[in-house]
Image 1: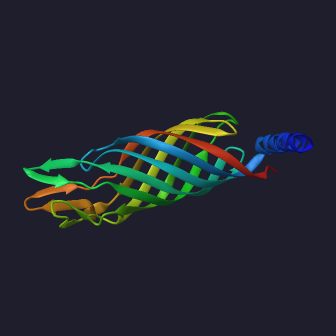
Image 2: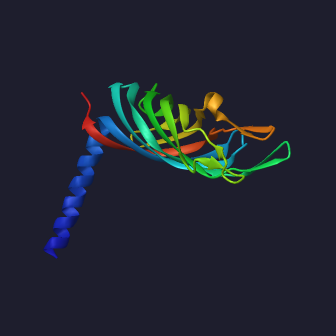
Image 3: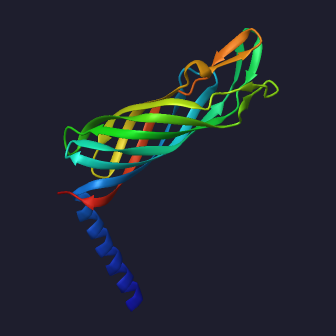
Length: 196
């Protein structure tokens, strides 16, 4: 019985300390999930993923950091001038800088992630896996949402710009290899340090 009470008291102290700490946190890890529809939808229909980011509040209203994660794009078949392309599912691993602006301690915020998106998965696109896909490109993820000390709820547009290497040619047909997503996400903030 004493052990049970000690565990309850310890848990209560830990929760209270975490709550006080979160009220003044300046450095944080953001862990979240996102999902959305592919735009345009040439080579995938939808995507879902996980976000992991570190953010430092340079001022109470302005945050900088680094972001990564994984986005899984669900491949789809595409008919391009009579040529059937069976696009494989693929992933995107962003390596990006994070910028956020918070006008108030709680409310609407805006921000973006900027960096490079590494495209993962099968190197080839059917038919017969004979067509190579791009390896990645410039990554952009603007978002707008609602935040409080613990949560961010947001709408986002994520895109990897593959440039000229993003066009896949099969005979006389060509398809732009797109990685755009428009959707929603949710992130939880874990405080690492107190404010000034």
